[in-house]
Image 1 (cartoon, rainbow, N blue to C red):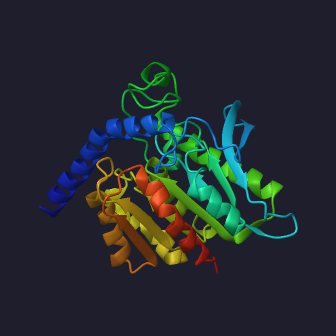
Image 2 (image 1 turned 120 degrees about the horizontal axis):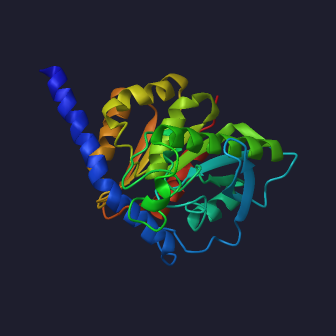
Length: 298
């Protein structure tokens, strides 16, 4: 009976993930094209952000990423680094605008936004596929299903997405004097799922991680198991959620919070009662930077 209940729970969460992913992609794509607002998305990158490209040796493709370097960063001083993972349909610029840039400038941070191989790569976490796969966006989006059919299968896509993040981090560490005790990871929606996944896989690299409205539906049934490596390594976890979010409902996010509590982990949960899937990004950014500043890897 216990196994039957567990099976229904897993099936229900996976079903919810697939039911929500279409609206998730629509929200991300719409905001990526919308004027700047509380959600922080614009059609054009912030002029303070560097638009960079490198040759991804794994596939011999040119890969883009976004980079912001505070004017306080110098070669002679170790600088804190934040890796920012975008939501479905976004790109490296998605979290590199608005409050995050002002806070990064003030705190002397390097802020980098990898593509994660493509707009729907999931950064190593389980890939949710709708309407196709590969380099295209969500099914139904421009360049989605038609292009996606020729792209890599989900498992390979997840590997490439993770490897792109790792490659960008390696390049940043080679170019700048990065403080290994103050290297942080944050992500929104799909990037929030990637944050939880990469957070636990590379626990010795992060001083703290922050997931914003994490679309971690596929990992949710095993949330305690996934969080355990960060518990063991002492990596603090912050989760930010909008109470009015219909794309990633609070009930899903609270399941992760309950696991954080049950494991007695160093964590912080902030919920904005009126916040939706987009507004929660800028609303939560000051608290995320405060959380990062308060935590240094020992």
